[in-house]
Amino acid sequence: MAGKQDKGAAKEAAATRRAERKAKRGQIFEAFKMQRREDKLLVPMMAGSVVGAAALAFVIGLFFHQQYLLLPLGVLVGAVLAMVVFGRRVQRNVYSRAEGQPGAAGWALDNMRGRWTVTQAVAGTTQLDAVHRVIGRPGIILVAEGVPHRVKGLLAQEKKRIARVVGDTPIYDVIVGNDEGQIPLRRLQQHVMKLPRNISPAQIDSLETRLAALASRGTALPKGPLPAGAKMRNVQRTIRRR
Image (tube, rainbow, N blue to C red; front, side):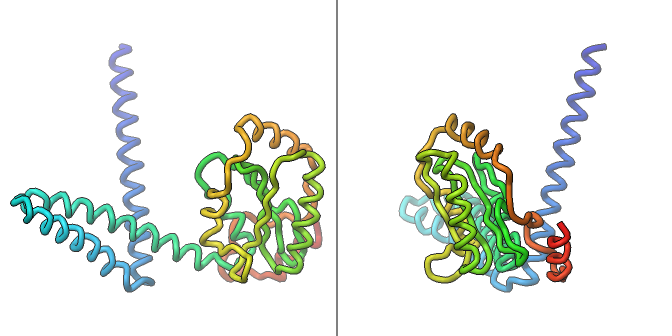
């Protein structure tokens, strides 16, 4: 009886995995179709990656009289390169759409890989400027988005507020934007992840506990970029009512 149950559970798990893989392939295909409609260079660049890698493998193989043996390897490498090109161009398109929208920086921070504790909109204004707080191995990173002359004041206030409870933990501040001294949205994740590792995982736990005790002040923004066509005045009116 137990054996039949085990086999049934194994079949069910296998079916679930197949369904997940099928769904993932469907998502990738839909993303490819959407990107292809907007990006005329996508298909030529992907095809060029495959042809270029295959040609290079063939030429190298000529020197060793193994060109037909290396050709399939070149095609395989080219296919991998084509997927890398596809992923990067999709990511670039996503960031270009999100750039300038309130909450875009918070969305980008929430999608970082690794151990990062992101608290969105720990400080903000009714104009939807915001400061997001990130805790990780570098220490504390305050990321501001909005009008520069307003967010600079928000950053200074938030930095002063948390400095009282975090001791000598490094505090970094970043303003998202395309002007001098700012970090473009598309490079935000890379910038944060390249900061030096200053504290241990145990210290991260301690920081999270201490900062969790601080009452968040300021206006909370919706997580992620606002949907296309959203009425900014309606959002601001909702915030004022709070």
